[in-house]
Image 1 (cartoon, one colour):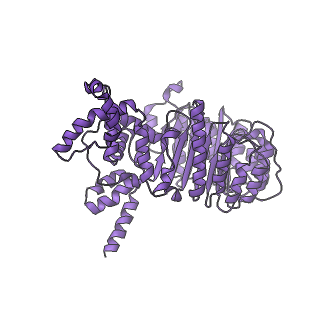
Image 2 (image 1 turned 90 degrees about the vertical axis):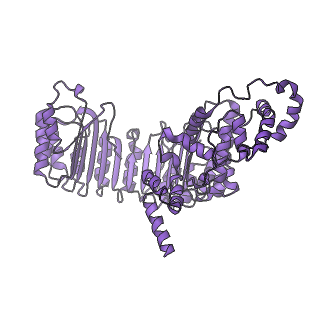
Image 3 (image 1 turned 180 degrees about the horizontal axis):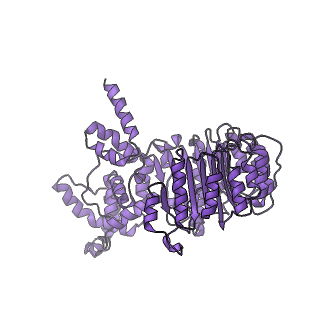
Length: 571
């Protein structure tokens, strides 16, 4: 019975693991419930609260330090009021570590607790009278200070040795509060699953403040790491600090390639283009060492003279299901070979095309990819897009193209009859080829169309477009301006039983527009959701009557849209 109750409790707490308010309430029930809730709250503490409470998280971590460490905090000018030893070893529960968010929290806590004009800077007669003695006894006495003296004797002892310790830290200013807290977390966490590390600027922890070796000494928390994300910003560092960063990256990759071999998601985002060969080689080994990598996302700059990251990914042919590449520096045979070898690959996202000739041999072969995203820039390389579409034609179900051209539309028409989701954002005229494509897609369920122009349909093209929409379509999203007349034709001629309709960038607020949509809502019982995104009233010459708006809201959702942003998501 006891085991049954414990198992039931675990299921209850697991269900509420992402609901901090409920977990906080459960803490107060009894000790057993508290012991169940605390690990869930502290597995990713910064994500379970708001920034104005970050300092409380750091304060709790600091209180987990030893008395010796806490005494050092006090003597470098950090106040530790209302000190209480915590009931739980909070760092052990940490599962998500984000170095930038952690540094932000540390900065907030330090600003709130730094003492202006600490004892380190105060004049003291002993500084002159006992200077030789302080040099001798300072290193010895610095570890004798009791942050919580248990009796009067230790209180008196603290008072006597304070000048010696103050002088020691004044002349040895190498103690780092940030490193001390980071070391605490790294040395004690034993459940780490997600690691996100930033390098390259002053807004995150420096390489000197992150001793990743501590992750492996006691518990080796890298063994169960599931997600790794690295961001290398354009370094604004001195030559020495840049060298330290490169060494830290090399050591981190090397260590992870030995221990962290069960990563499922990896994202490498680098804005630095001059990383040395040793960094590239160690990253190659890290990728190559993975056993269960499912998702890889990167814009990493690599030199063609070095082994390709795509070659390293060949070892993941049995597990890799998602590949996202943006800002590619090379598109060559190693990528094409990888596409043919990654048998489990289902999602391919290509964003940002290399701005120099592509050297790739698209041989005959069939890819298993189901979802393909082609970002803006690839429209200039129809050789890539058309060949990819040809190689995926039998399996492709979801296609997203930003910067669609008539050539791409024709390639899809000839090769992709199985599409169920199509998203197109066109910066060229595609209205002649689009109806032909739609008439071939008998399985299409979702259609998203975007264009930067205010009006893209004429009376003739809106009729052809509306009549070509397949009857299988359930969801339609249009992100361009439509006149009331064009909207009437579209909704009248479209034979598909739409369950969801979204209209963005509508520039008119004529009463007729709302009447058309209200009537369409009344006449179509299968319509589950209709959203109309409107720009602010200041964008129109004749703002619509408020009564008309209020009446329309009874039938569908009206969203105020920022005209400077595209609120739709093609993917």
